[in-house]
Length: 208
Image (cartoon, rainbow, N blue to C red):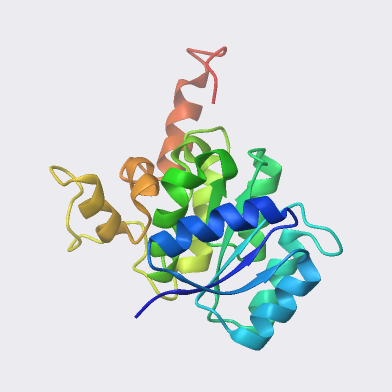
């Protein structure tokens, strides 16, 4: 069954390009919106599987629209498609309930994967965000959104070890998107933080 999508962006040319990309991959674009309020109305009326929303839309920005979308259609998964790579935008989106965050410059290669992953109840983030200084915070914010439908990310003793597995296999084990799995297969945020603290006196100039 084709994934049903509402697409929201205030630039018509971008909507046209993204729609062509999605339909080429056999997704079903059931509605379009040019501002945040229309996006909420479209989702409320159509209850799509996924809403792809721009962050910087008029009348209602993408973060506020995401919150209203989830109240109106809790089963709809939201992917942010945006020009904003700054940490503050990513964190705000995750806290609002966005499940995927894709930069427009990477839409051709990443948007399809993001839609597929969030449709399966996973969270999709760019690996660059997870390797940044707020990577642990991103994983914690995203983890709170997927815990009810996916296994916890910290492996139990009976859970399979990521060692020797492909990235896709690790993603399935951890309940995250493929790019996220590259990072989350490493030690947990808590252990990484404590390790940095233990080594901070020896290397005071090391970057976090």
